[in-house]
Length: 399
Image 1 (cartoon, helix red, strand yellow):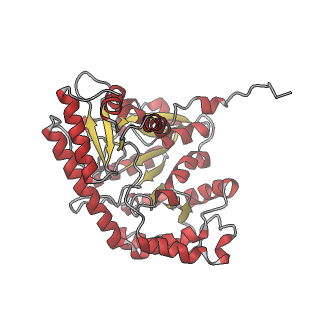
Image 2 (cartoon, rainbow, N blue to C red):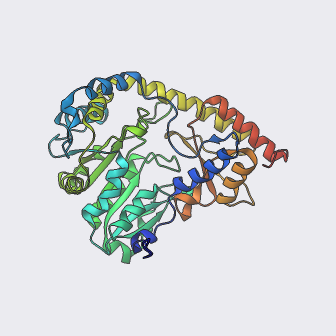
Image 3 (cartoon, helix red, strand yellow):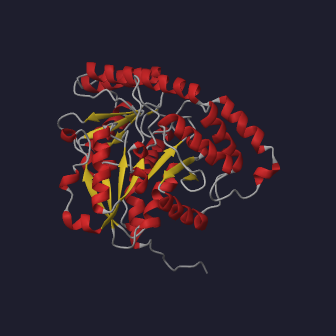
């Protein structure tokens, strides 16, 4: 007899909305199954290939049997040293490879586990809204309470730190910040970062700074490191990723740096839930950090050209109020009057076979916007603009 006992998901899991990108992928797969030509600009997954010299480094390392065993939870010393060298060269920030650096299976893994490392049940994490979903899901999984910090256009998509509920603030133990920002593309001025550090010190907060897009600045913009602020190491842990910088999303390699205690706490989580990054991938990461600057600039140039085509084209179609992003490979676009974020997303998919991301999928304060990822070639972006023009003219063909 088959087992007829039913199972129920945990209460914590039940508190989460459907994961944004999984839902988008489901809708896309349904459209593809019907034979439709989908232009997918929904998920931030680079279409540019990983540079060949990084692949060659992986190939060499994968043939070494020493790399086939369990990796160290703390990552190879050679990788931690390469990260320290890169950080000093890029940001003039010195890091102790033994105590202040922790390689990760992608920065998402570290971000999602960070609340588990420092929150007790019922304690609060301050989370930007709209924001990257793992800030909230990681907090919920840890039994913590998310306190949302609205990112609004009138405040340049920076949180108003003086407007946070005092009751919540008294129970807060950590604050997530992310600049250059996903999804809004906003960049934080140094003055705001200094203000955030003072705020963190005053309220006893750990500052978890997501810098995944720090290497994706256009026209000479270079994002600063939060750790470059004097005294930041006292309470900041910063998360980086090789995913976007070197088109390595599927490789799953990133790192956390900063306060030695926060690094140690996160490392203790890792030692209990995973066995580290495949060492051949770690060797490829060493090569990327030490030899990849020129290739990273080439990849960035591709995104800059795509950004220019998309924003210029949308402005011609009537979106005059679109900001030209200074960083990230996204464009954050106001929804036309008469639509919600979800409605415009579904309209694009159903009438133009274009996948974009509704702003409210990143949180309630993302309503009124949608996000386009610059992850298709210029020719496909131009084709998408032509399809959007047909929608506006009422000439699109409904499936």
